[in-house]
Image 1 (cartoon, rainbow over the protein chains, first blue to last red):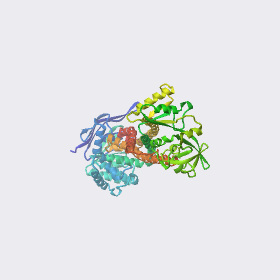
Image 2: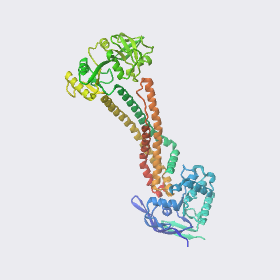
Image 3: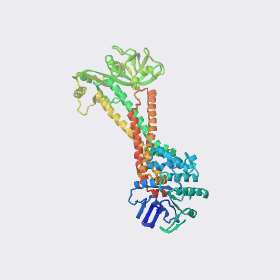
Image 4: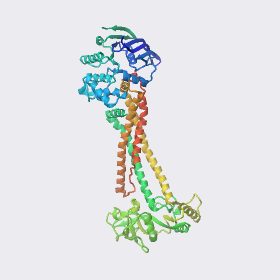
Length: 229
Length: 403
């Protein structure tokens, strides 16, 4: 039996919009095991981004409990959440979100700064990661000197920098052409093979074949869970 | 810490133009403050030096409301030889002498200038020179029986008072009378004194048709007497002999120390006002930093969200932004100090060539430099507090969604 890494227990999330309350997530139960490769799909406005934010400890539930590696995060302070995010979760965004003033290497090393890793260790590790994402030759380039695919590989490298349990990717191929997107997916699969849990949020149905488990979210609820062999 | 500093520095480099424009606000203010303080300090110490020369045992008696020599008030307010007699007889006065300064026309080889002449008795000449730290550098001093003889200030011979060269033995016309130059005074450093023409007091009174007047009387307190006590006695006796009521005197009696003190007070106020005005520009500079930082927070909202997502705590974000605004202040201040030193030296140079004064000396004590640097860093940091707090408390999910 694989260990549970993320568990959502009857989670609700409401947003206040002026006078009215919008129920974005209406009672979701979800369990993600170590080493899973999960794709969450759903149309825009379905609540999948909200679910992703809560899985990634970027946001807290209005009601219900979220467990990350066995720890209930509902009552934690923002700085404790930041620590958990930095250590356990690696984020990959659709728009890459690299820091434009930092080189590829520095971007990858950035999360380690917030974990207090010393400089030599940071550089050593960032160089290893650069090698893994096949970007050693771009070590000192700024993001705007890199192609879209390269930028996303730097972003994935950054997500790996603190050796997280989980990589949480929000439309990681959304801004890339098909070929580059396929390369990025290949990289995710390799990482998954080495034991990293991958959670991918998308509305690109082509990505579904990569997943062991597909969750479909609609109107704030999990509508369907599909397992693949 | 070093890493946050690096991150902050990188961000400033990214927006070079905006960073420079923001820093201009700070360095104009800092430059003005540094230049004004340095010149003020220099001026003050130069004046203190002159007072030191005068000695602390001197008592200066002037008609009320008198400014620089020669600008004395109306006729009823003048001091006379009768007052000088009264002062000489006060207990504790070792000696006293008076002199007369008047504006008049001087001519030399067809050129004519308006100038100040000082009338002084030949026996007091040496005392006066000594108090002013002056010596005769050419010729001789005024002597008893010198009638139409003149000792000229330094600028008459060694600076550009006259187009034609002048020296001992030449003749200058003062208010229509010919005076033979017998001596030249050493340099004081302020243009009024260095342009003085020293003549016999009796002759000056005669040619200007003045009955009896002393522009200023200087008394020396005998050793063993407190100059302040002696000054009080002089004031009392003069009041009695001139028939004036207390608080309504038409003269003032001050020891050299009191004079220096009241001068310092006025000077301090003037300087405070000037530095205050310069301070306003610093305030504006600080607001400029705040504005830049707010814009920056808005612009980088998504970046802040990203940093939070990858593990930055609120305090990390706060520090990065505070370092940024502090750096804007510090670098702006550093440049401002450089410009301020340049301005101070420039003002000193211009003063020395165009006014011929060495009174205006810019001084840059270490505490001024360090103080200005710390102050500019402080302004930067303070201006950054609110924007940095705003950045720090952004919710990561919201910040990431921000477009």
